[in-house]
Length: 174
Image (cartoon, rainbow, N blue to C red; front, side, top):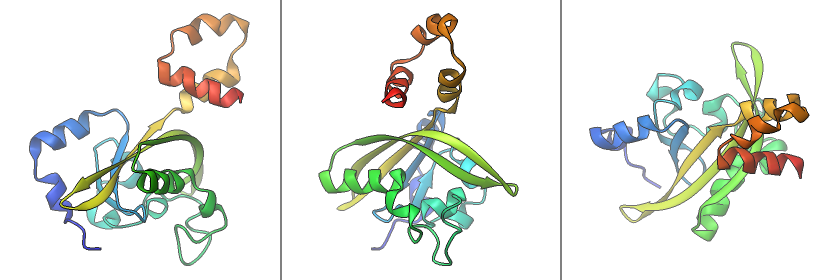
């Protein structure tokens, strides 16, 4: 499958500004979860050098610990078959509907493993007769920390959480 060049996505300054304003990691990916575009927030995960990660599989670009377990990289380890990011993209493309899921991801950063909790949204769209996925990863680690630390006194704080954050707490309880 021939992809648009990275410059294609970055050409429209207005669209770039809109994507950069979204306070979540936003990507455009293909069916193999290769990165084609990302917003400024997502650069925290992939770094500043676009040529280093353009068309890399997400696990390799994010430095997922499982992507480094085999020489074949992302989608080759036993854990990759259960990867919520990968399965969410696949499900959204198969059903041509938005898919949402929650996951815990371990990433390598400066030779340390960092664990983050993500709300994963995968939404398919068509561009020039090709189907892509808008992949939004919302870091909800602060919600998990609140749930783990809370006691009866924190019930008022939980009432102030946004709808998505309360939804995540419900998933956690299940």
